Amino acid sequence: MTAPRELLAGLVDDAGLFPPTALPMDQAVERHRADVEAGEAMHTHRFLVPASRVDELRELLRDGEVFELGLIADRGGEGLAAVCADVATDPRLRLALLELPLAAFGDDEVIALEAALAELKDVPTEVPLYAEPVVQARPEPLLTALARHAGTRPLGAKLRCGGVRADLFPSSEQVAAFVTACVAAGVPFKATAGLHRAVRHTSPETGFTHHGYLNLLLATATAASGGQLSVQDVLETEKATELARRAHALSGEEAAAARRVLVSYGSCSTAAPVREARLLLDSAVKDH
Image 1 (tube, rainbow, N blue to C red):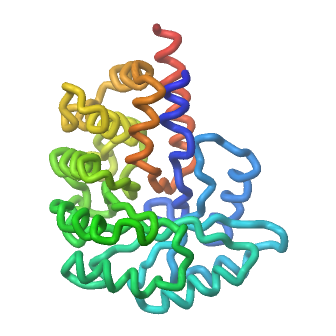
Image 2 (cartoon, rainbow, N blue to C red):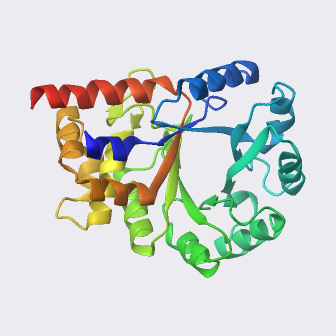
Image 3 (tube, rainbow, N blue to C red):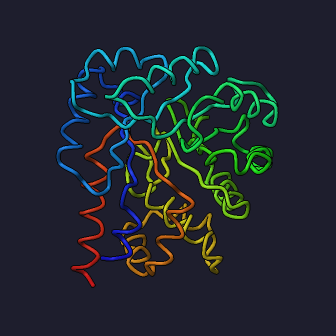
């Protein structure tokens, strides 16, 4: 189980505030507290929160506790520096990473990234920043822009895998191109939205085809290793047993290489990813 453990450790950010679960803040905070206490290895124990809702979160925090935040710039640069400053002065909060939709800063990736970095000049340089491209189907301009600022702070890309509309779900070809481009450029990425289950599937409620988080992990491992398998084929695999077999076949080094590229993903459910991983990978061991 060494490779699967390395592949899955610290994978799931808590996105309970976001659709489709969209928990009220008080319920999301209570669930996060319980998850932190449980110490599940698949969780990053980062709480993803829109910048516009940080004050709402602060009202619910207790003295002596610390929430690790993944701050989402949901209003672009509007008030973002002030929110980051407020987080820095609250001992109950620690800014673990920032996620920026560059479209909120401009239509040109280079100019938008420069504007975002200027807005965040007072944020400690050790805080990673993950930028979502203006046009996800064309990640190269973003990756080029990120390369121009290498060394200023940890920088990465953000891959949107779904949403509340069908057009927000990228094709397997687009995801494969994004992953391959990140590997080629040496740029890590984190994923968001739509990754509700381990294996690629079609939702009976919406008819949307969802990418699986295990598909994405193994596709990233394939791209990072330069193996003969097609990254797109791995993304399109719907056989759970095949994906579990591939996960167990990875070496520890291959799993670690994949996770240097795919840092984490946000899940509105923190229980479902853990439950599915255990069922899938444990059954593969028994079958073997």
